[in-house]
Image (cartoon, rainbow, N blue to C red; front, side, top):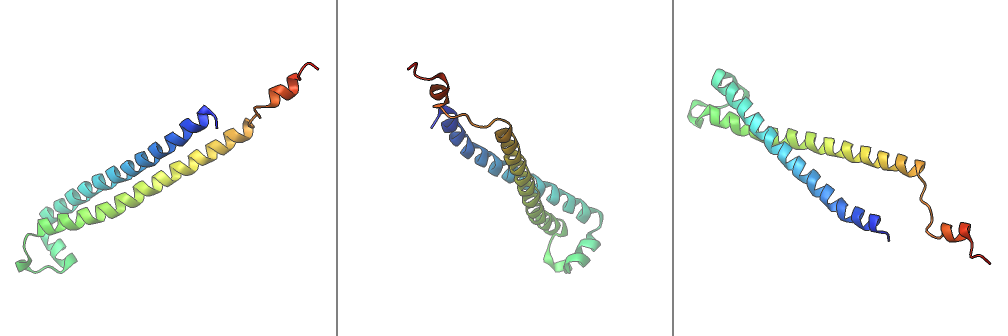
Length: 120
């Protein structure tokens, strides 16, 4: 095992953690945006939200309910989009590695001994 291989093996968990944090951050950001968007709709047209979710007037604040539902859908959509984008970046990285591997085939370590000879 060469030093490059050991560095690469230590690098892979860092990439996985980075992708996980990217998915987490993306889904939380989407949840906040979804909650704000639903809250804005509830402020503009509370009748629309009441009819959309079949809410009665006694159920409480329509704005709070809409922001909660918007945050939940934001988490789902954000996690799906972030996961898909990370999946695509992994696929592109694998393709890039395959192309580099084909253009630069690995050279055996003992090739220098074979080509140089032992002088005898």
